[in-house]
Length: 352
Image (cartoon, rainbow, N blue to C red; front, side):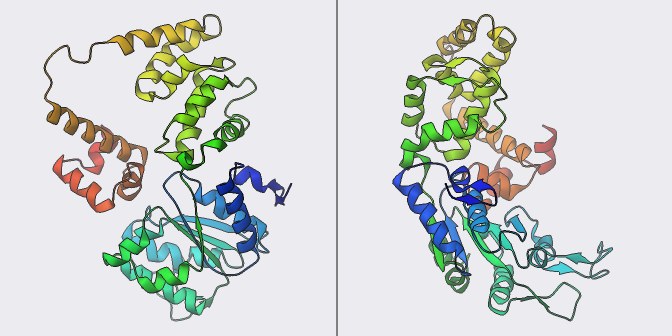
């Protein structure tokens, strides 16, 4: 088994489907070059893990691997974050700061969500990739950097180029070696292996749940809009609520309805070890509750539900709008428009 810095490549890129075997082959090939790599695919497919595997398989494995989420850095700080600054170069610059490019020198810099990078910073990034030099804010001197750049995005950058949101020249500079990750729905044969992988990764403690063949079949039939990240979260919920128990059809029905099942399982958890059937029994009344006991304004209901989801996304990301937008698979501009429509402020989300 191929190891990467003491870790098997299969531990980072899990699965045995044809698509995953091809990706592992591309990673091995790309690791032998210095070329830039662009990893694309839906959110939750494991783009950072592929970048880590590529770094560990390369001659730079002993040097730093630095991951940066381009969309999570405030616009006014992104230049300083990437390129650094000198003491006194702007208000609040109390000391010299080394940027991510310098910190990753001789290693690998992973820029996630590259499609979120502002256009003016795209120009700076292109220059760095061409010249291999950075200049800190407030400095008159260039600093040589030797960085392997791996970028990733869930967006279609060709569409972003057509819309004027992304530079074509930067796209061609980044897309030397493209790696496209499939959605989990396109490789469902990997689901059982992923389940076992997550169960063995610590959060299931010494007494993990046991998934029946029927439960695995249900998982393989699910459409997985959140991809591998969604599956990982489901396995973690199962490890919390059904520790040491068998997970079958009834438990799966609860796990795939997290908003309802979490409440039911939380009540059942203290007695689950002695009376495991109570977990299922507690879920039954919720499923049997009449949905239309009174008239309902569907439009108002959908608007309230949308507002609730937006607020929860902001709470989950500490008020970072770009990150919250990615959680609900919206463009940042669309997310901001909806915040204005529903009068959601960042402070309101954090205090709600």
